[in-house]
Image 1: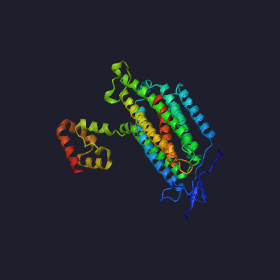
Image 2: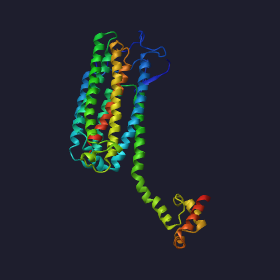
Image 3: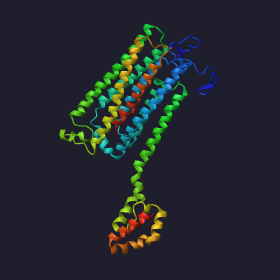
Length: 178
Length: 231
């Protein structure tokens, strides 16, 4: 084995020897006591009415407990770093998974309302002159549609008076062309 | 029992547990452990999907989650948390006993076996407590989806409790399956320890079992406050 290897940033002479680290029993006992203590804390906190703070506090305590378990019981503190890399890499991907999904779940309704995504399509359909759903959200396609059929707002009243059925068919045709 | 015993510097000395395709035990154990960590990564990703389901449910129906969680037993959850934490300690001690064990020593093997038995015992206690919790839920009809009949048993829970209990049963159920699997692995490792296989020369099997068991503990560390203690 002539390849160089590094452990915690330092070059090691014999890259394939065992790098194990035996922690003293006292350390394991201290960690166990700390875990019990933190469990008691989470339990106590759940009875204190912290309002919106209670979830972040409970999660922070749980994260602290989890890092104690991972660092000492699972030896990541003194282990080869590639295992830590695998673990932290997993956490990053879980973060992406949670972050994007929760953001989408939380913001989608507000975005739909703000952009009137469904409301406008509904209005148009009710008015009987609907460009098919989707056209009204795309400025370029909307402009093309308007160039063919005249501007929305002007047309709306007249078309309305003429009756919804025919206009709707025209809208469908326009959809087909695009 | 010094702070850092490098007991396994066995270069030069023949280690019968090294497979022919590895240079030495360091490389072999490192490869085994990396494989275990990659498996644990997939486990974390699997559980993260369930945690996400919980958070979305909580985000959309906060009052329902608050109302339904009152029916989970904080005492049972708390006892199980302590049992699992203690079992994590006994598991860590089993791994440590293997790390410092002398090859062929009956006493050292007995130490590993003692801590494995304690861990198994804790896992058993955990499942017994879970059994009582589950039977209470079954009795009160607090079940997932279409099986939910708590309203017929006189419990009026606001909102969509059948969804909360769906999340509760899937999360704790999958966790419980992991406890069962862990017990099976520990019995296997116990038998191998009885044959005197584990010592400072060879302890990757015990250590990987430990990693798996600590992951089970890790998941519960988050399950407990989220399901039982939410406010």
